[in-house]
Image 1 (tube, rainbow, N blue to C red):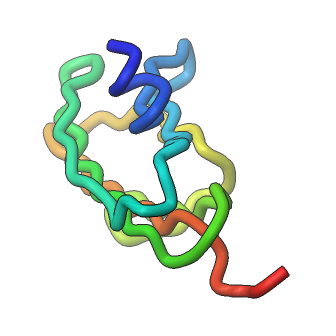
Image 2 (cartoon, one colour; image 1 turned 180 degrees about the vertical axis):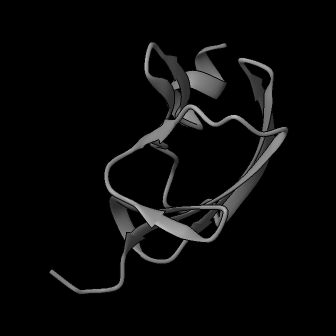
Length: 88
């Protein structure tokens, strides 16, 4: 549970499923399938740069923040871009 909730960053929340990965920069990404409140979430995380900045799309639509709202459907596709392309 510690790996999925804190390293992969897939955590249940009262208002939905929170996505906040904190994975090593050497990892290129991962895929995970998580059932939450009767909905199957297909989550794919891609590292695009250094750091832990996030850009999340749900079924192709960008969302603000890290909370996936509760959906009334069977399957949800989540794409996460992790890191920043800009150099600091």
